[in-house]
Length: 122
Image 1 (tube, helix red, strand yellow):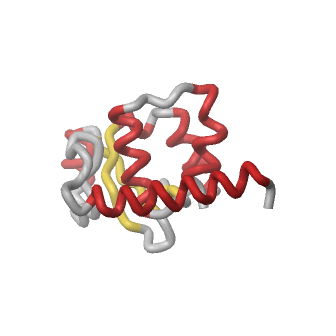
Image 2 (cartoon, one colour; image 1 turned 45 degrees about the vertical axis):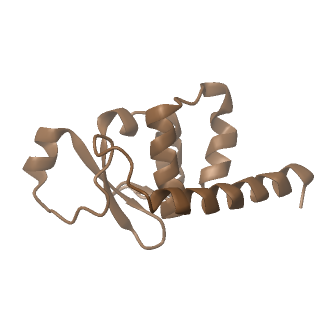
């Protein structure tokens, strides 16, 4: 494995461990997501401007705001999934929660998007 890839793997592992312990303390801002919301009332989702997205191999359902849905990093991750019928993101659930936090709090810059896509994607 390339040296840069090895660093990325170690960083990803470290983030996963830290985020798992952090996420036990509380969920991300409810404005951006409603984790595992099983409501099928589409009219309610539209009125709040939240959109369903399915994450990971387990297809855990999240409702995301239009600000997250419109972010270039999020769009690149969903484009990689290759599914046309539903919006999916191919990454671990805990990484997706970290991604949502980052989009709310850090606003990644376009020059780092390729690295971030590689970091979050399977």
